[in-house]
Length: 231
Image (cartoon, rainbow, N blue to C red; front, side, top):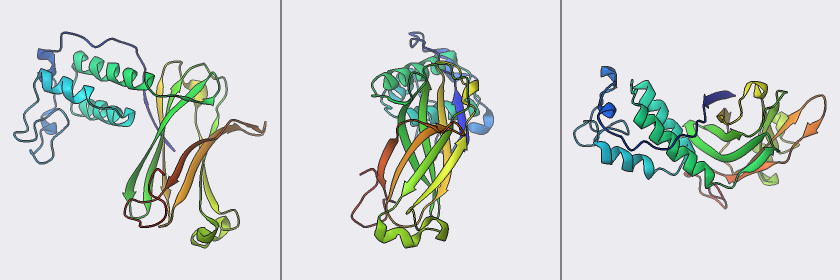
């Protein structure tokens, strides 16, 4: 399980969104118009102007997409405080509008899933969390994917009886600070059948388990069948 981390710093978007946007980009980030960065024109490859960048940020409703935008901006050498603050402000606004699930009550809120295809039968499953209270222990994230009984024969032999696969992530939750946003990502292999995907936190050997949070039924969009992704 790979953990991607960035700090939660509540800052209002700056009204001075001007010249600093244009400076600080690494020369190697310049892209062809057919594959621009989010802050570049799709026709010329030039950096967008102030209003266009503000519009691009404010129309983004996905926490995962806002994270990717911030990461791309930083990797391209962007160092404008105004851009960072605008991205953080939009992230905070989106997070406030989501009904959070108490993955670890009073300690860690779950805000959403992201599942992307990463290769032939390989998928990137990500969970988005916000730290609400200091944790003095390292919790284990148990990610599970179960199939319908008729599809159990498609699983590895050791998983066919239970009809599900599972993965465990030993996260360093004791090092997470209150207010941080955390993304936990697991790469998994799935057969071409629908899976019901869910997760929960636990501690072993204390055998303390928290409530399940579910994605629901997932199937590759190219898979024709009774279930479709996200249903």
